[in-house]
Amino acid sequence: MAKAARELITLQIGHYSNFIGTHWWNLQEASFVYDDSSTTDINHDFLFREGITPQKQETYTPRLLSIDIKGNLGSLPVDGSLYSPQRNDLSINEASWHGHVELIKQLPEEKNEYLMDLEIEDSRYFTQRDEDKDICMDDVTNEHGAKSSSLPASQKIYDLSKSVRVWSDFLRPHLHPNSLYLLDEMLLQSGRAVVEGSHSNYGFLAGASVYQREDVEDGITDRIRLLAESCGSLQGFQILTDVHNAMGGVSQGVLQHLEDEYSTKDFITFGITPPHLNPQTPQARAVIQATIAQSYSEMSSLSGVFVPLNLRSHCLDLQAPVTKWPHLNIEARENNQYLSSSVLAAFLDTMSLIYRSRTSPLPVAHIVDVLTFGGRKIAGGSLALPYGLGVDDYLFDWVKGHKPHLMSVSSGCDITVDPVSEVQVIRGVQSSRLVSPDTRLPPGVHYTSAAQLYQSFLEESETPPSLRFITSLRDPLKVSTPFPSIFSGKLSDDGLLVPSNSSFSATSVKSTPCGAGLHQGGSIGILLEQLLGSAQNLDVMKVPQLIDEGLDKEGWSSVLEELKKLKLNYCHNNEEMESSDDD
Image 1 (cartoon, helix red, strand yellow):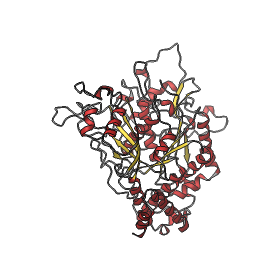
Image 2 (image 1 turned 90 degrees about the horizontal axis):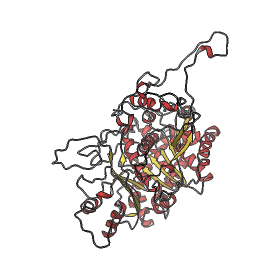
Image 3 (image 1 turned 180 degrees about the vertical axis):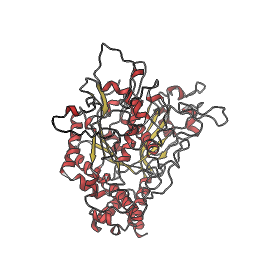
Image 4 (image 1 turned 135 degrees about the vertical axis):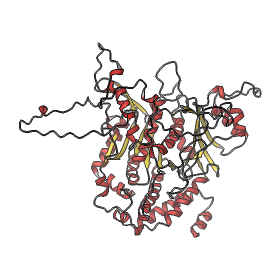
């Protein structure tokens, strides 16, 4: 029996975070079950909410506030399209002025094929249903005059890797009118000079200053309040935020508001650094690196747990190697935001199942308690995509000779270094793949889930850490359109490995088992050591943009001091910290 959902509000702050969030909401909608004959272990009420449009259409939309810069929405209206009345073309005959009228029409943003197909499928939301008429979908056209395809958009194959410019170019779910808040880039600049080569990459303090404007703060906090008031039993917030630009400063203001107004709730913050950053000058690079350091310092203190997400192996080295998964093809394509963000979305969709399960969701408060103690408020993330099972494998035998391909999504953190605690999720391993029919288990031993089996194996093999929570769900990761084709090697359409000597011909992966985890351990200390060492080498007083934004020696010293305190929590004793300072 499904337990009542204690809701979570999602905040997406920054353009790349919205790329990840878009993939994440698409993945969630792909896992919806619409008929009684199918089952799911996922309770979507944790992150979605019901509503009704002026056209009396029932809706199910993300419980979301997305913050970005004006101009980053593409063809998506700022108030969405779900609750808006049908937009008819204006005519000069409608003008109340009786003199000469000149009608100026702005050309609509060009939509890709995927969005045009969605527009046709969703046309029922924009017109009142006439129950006395039958509508033939084959004759429905969108605003561009294109007719609907015989295949729904989720079943067609698109090459969006070259056509996607902004995150709304592949957004599947509809958003509530209050789900979007756009900042004016002119407010970020505010007369300050941006260093050459930074491509409008404003720093942390520029974002913090903009948030302090009364109109901006009220616009954001009012939307958060409305989201909170729509919840029956709000348990907390999950925040996805860019940390390499001004959005880090905006997030600092948002987190401070949550701390002040929702102190009894729990926050999980995912601080995201995209892999495609390529500053053209040393000063532009210094702006990004200083902003990342400031974001880590501030967000870790304001969050229940702070999880850095970065596909590169170093948190401040923007050219460090990208993490490689055995059966993914993303290296050499990491500069494509649409592709790289899909990997982090797969991590979030899988990891979050631990508190989105229908039967035994773990409260966010418990996750925070497991991962944070003794001042350790930063945790690392891992992802096994796919999980690694072969088409002929059973989990009971497979775990004895293999390990899930859990790769770091947190700047290369090695989760095997001094592990202290962790939570893991396994999804998509069906009960029929737990134990081979030919295997004879000891008397009294019976496995009903992948989590039970894997937990038993880890305990028997005394694999650390001792504080561990594992959950499993039958639902695989459904990677239907518009999820990109990132899988390589021989995989079946349900994401299982095919032997190299097989005559199997490659096919499109439709779903896959995978795993994800959050980990506390010594590897976070190594990450902080990298961060602190690189930050100490920055001469921020030689970067005019940072000075113009308000950064001074005292402020930068406070950032470095806070990073030292964070690192100290991962040292066995103070001598280790002192020796590293001497170096």
